[in-house]
Amino acid sequence: MSLFDAAKAVRENAYSPYSQFKVGAAIRTTSGAIFAGCNVENVAYPEGTCAEAGAIAAMIAAGETEIAEVLVIADSPQPVTPCGGCRQKLAEFAAPEVEIALAGLSGETQRMRMSDLLPGAFAPAHLER
Ligand code: THU
Image (tube, rainbow, N blue to C red; front, side, top):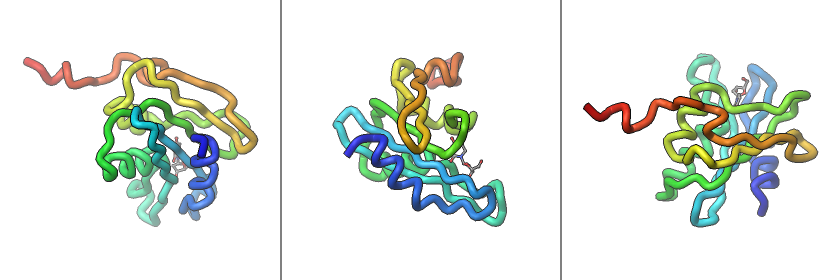
């Protein structure tokens, strides 16, 4: 299955009764495995989680940590980019050159690198004293 197909399929399961905005995300790891996630909203709005966070959780639960490629899909006139928090979450497991593909329902529309999405990322080196 392609990243696009995986993200499109999981998007259908998004739980988004508050925003009515379904998002799907799929991660391919360096092993070639694909992990998918969708947004899961909550009546206590800040408790909702993004599609990217779900895909990352599935990857970690399977024992993998190295992201090779990401695809995010939504039904929007503009390509949907990961929110600020998700950029930091992705950067934990994606090297600066990793590509994040942005897609609408009929296909991929844009590609960005991790380093474009989060330049100057807070990184483990910043914890060194
Ligand atoms: N959302 C995601 O899941 N990922 C993104 O990259 C952007 C936003 C979700 C959060 C919320 O459930 C809905 O989209 C509207 O903001």
